[in-house]
Image 1 (cartoon, helix red, strand yellow):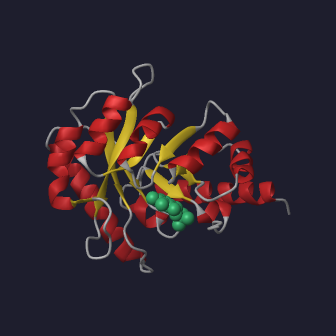
Image 2 (image 1 turned 120 degrees about the vertical axis):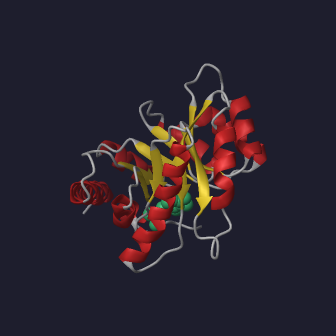
Amino acid sequence: MSQGTDISMHLNSTLDAIRRAEQQHSRPAHSVTLVAVSKQQPVEKIHAAYAAGQRDFSENYVQEALQKIKLIQQPDIIWHFIGAIQSNKTRLIAENFQWVHSVSRYKTAERLSEQRPASMVDLNVCIEVNIDSEVSKSGINVNEAKELALHIAKLPRIKLRGLMAIPAARDNYDDQVGLFKKVAALQQELNDSGLQLDTLSMGMSQDYLAAIAAGSTLVRIGTALFGTRNYE
Ligand SMILES: *Cc1c(COP(=O)(O)O)cnc(C)c1O
């Protein structure tokens, strides 16, 4: 079977599973967006997913992403940046992406705000929360998230949309749901303090059904769509 057929099949079965989970948890149909994680995957696979109807793609490494964006040239693709953000890369991110999910410092948000071209629509931003502080080092601590969010929400040219989290892999579905629910509760707390956040970016190949059960609005899926990544 061709690579394109494989990707189209994986895409459809993943979308089916997402739609079933929406129904099962009484979520509105299409309230969960599938973002294909194309990091360390060849351009051909992105073309195949695009041909099968996928439009949201995400990348973790700026240089790799820029090469792909240039090669692919599809104006209706929505590019999401989900990787660690180095200060010297914020301009390229601000100029080439529609979404950034991995903001965890005010300084980064400020740079993105200053560097977002005025000619473009506002850059959508999520704050990455360290919901799993024993095992992870990325993201802001839960108890510091509110202050950061209230500050970031005031910046021009970026729009704070919500929270992103990457809990450590767990085999147990209920454990997965429990952790994602903490992120959802934090989002609720922020909205109760006057913010209007509509995005919960959580769930990957191994735990996206649990994330949807807990209220995720955007799942970031790589391996289940494209197969194992090429780490060369
Ligand atoms: C790589 C990556 C993913 C996708 O992980 P899979 O397990 O391949 O689905 C999602 N989110 C982030 C932030 C990633 O770095």
